[in-house]
Image (cartoon, rainbow over all chains, first blue to last red):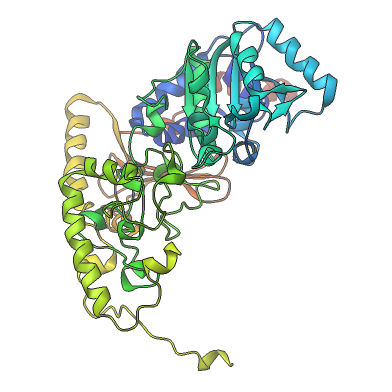
Length: 363
Length: 143
């Protein structure tokens, strides 16, 4: 295990053992077998020093900057930051010092000098209504900017649910005519990193992969890296054993909620949501929605905003029926859950002191 | 209203000590068999292996049970690297409990390693070479 990266890290005071520990944790987060940690450490440390750092251009479209917040506030500026040092972030409106013409010049210089080689990161959806007038940068609609920047890109990273699937701007009735990156660009490899916002380490993982192997990691049918989106929240949830045993919280303040039982009946979308929150967690591994007692909203799935209600159980008929239909995939287990759900409803009806009901939450 | 006037009602008295009430899922005991199998493999072929405890549906109580059951052996090592890491041999020699903490002290990853010596503890030849250079520097300073 020797090479430029390990030397760079050593100069920054990061020891080999620290790096090995980081890779072991990264492998665990990527749901790879433990042995992969060591393999990754070796591959990343031995990656040949590029003559120049790979250029990354980051374009913000119809977005809230939550994705940038998520990435930049991910960790203390340690190893993840150093991996970011291994790239050249040539355009990022929120982070760059330049503005106006200078910024535009930086963008076009980067696009020209790295033609065919740069990694294009997009956050936000692209509005098509009113000829794209809903969101413009430097007098150009997002649609024009995307087409122009995509031409010379080696690959495109659609960062966040908006860029990947249209996200909240695309929610019914979609007033701006928002679409995703993959709705427009058809001739470039696109990697979707959905989530509202996405988990920071997914970005680091994809970057590490791009730096190490010069390619994108393996993707699923929705263009998401399998390492992070290969399994559902439900598959990896620490409350899963309670689901299997039919132990559910029926309200947010009942015995089941206090005991930390499964939140399926409170509308948790974990069974149909592919993401790594259950293993990676949030805020430096502090906690994640289910651990803090709230069901998963399903924010990394397409059209999560129109899923029929965050507090409707997947087994209950939801209006657009999209997520309800998907729940059938869970199969026999869901059937068991449903019978428990019905039993739960019966006992809830008997109870005279119902404090918080699903109906209250739906209002 | 004074604090002691607020009535406190215990919803879940711990009178029935059924496993589920202690938060045990029943997934921990089966791990013992897997660890036994991996230990057998280590003896037979010398091949080391690891179990990612974060990748399994284990409740905090399950982890406590496993930790308690495997116990603490004679060797415990601490590594200071972007947060503390502890590598503790259990009462079963060759079975190590490895916990990596991040800078905030939260557990970043947790493994059971079945190996004679965890890889992380061994010094890398490159680092040993740097150490040797440093020693030679120290010796040259003596004269």
